[in-house]
Image 1 (cartoon, helix red, strand yellow):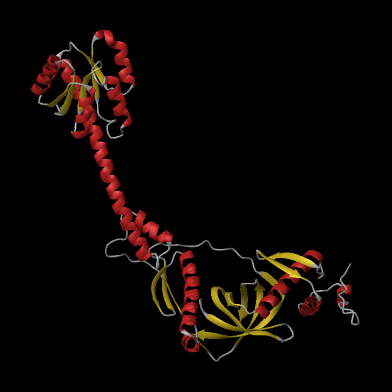
Image 2: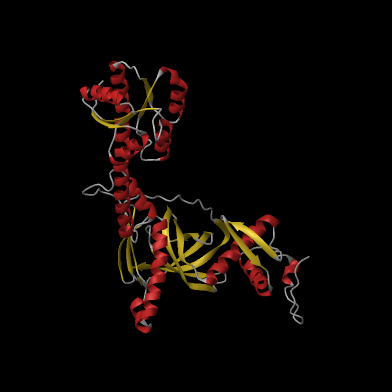
Length: 425
């Protein structure tokens, strides 16, 4: 074992014992400080850096027990190794000192070899403890510096990156690779349609409030899908998805409801911000509130934007303001594709929900006969309809157009004189 040198305090009220101990310790290469009693030892401990303390139990002014109690109550001094020097007839006192925190003991008539071994063991333990304290302080310092840097990164990038992305960058051992990497990403560019014209008619504070509300909503949506905001200029926002975190949301399996009679539609294709003049015809053959399968006479490509005019089976127009995007080609012969509705006006939404509810009811009962209030699940969505005169009349009319059989007493909808609803019993 490597011999370590230390600063040792020797406390004994007998000068001969102090001189003998000091002489042996100095021969072993240690620095020695002496004290005559416990009170003087306390003053030295508080003013000097020590590695070990050797003291007798019985001393004037302040004995060994009081010194140990003082060390025990002081957090900065609890790690100082203490070796008790005791006569053989004081073993009970030695045991009590060990219980109070003393490291070891030596008899007053000790062997110099034993003294060297005990001192060496205590110094090694003290050295390891001091090293641990030093490393802990250095680690605390590094953690504080890292916390400051992390706060700076969060403050700097928090406006453009979600918390999950910032956490991933901070927790990664490599961070972001220097020089970047090749990655297939999705880029989204969006702005407010007609923003210039609208902003010219609003006061400055109105424009600011509009932008804040718009950007708050867009930021929440982008961060929800682990996107990164690359740039914001006025009402324009540029976002990137797939970097630095690749996020693939779980695909929802939606079963579309087959229509007994297809719904007629006419649609145009959007190229850029303008719709092409050519009008195409098609039929909606399957439907949910958010998606539809459309059969046409021509083949179209994925991600094509459509503006749709929707008609019932009697060619009555429901809306000409329904927007959708082709998300999947199902067949080229005959042409069949699935769309996701990007905008559904209220009249189309009510029309779709009514159709889906009536189909669901007719499957359960063999004919359409709605209760006063009903909750129907169609394609995983809960549709709640409360029947009233207007709705029941509309349902009966639509039911007939779709080829469904309404209940006979449902056709007696409204008492013309009292205007009270007559529901089936």
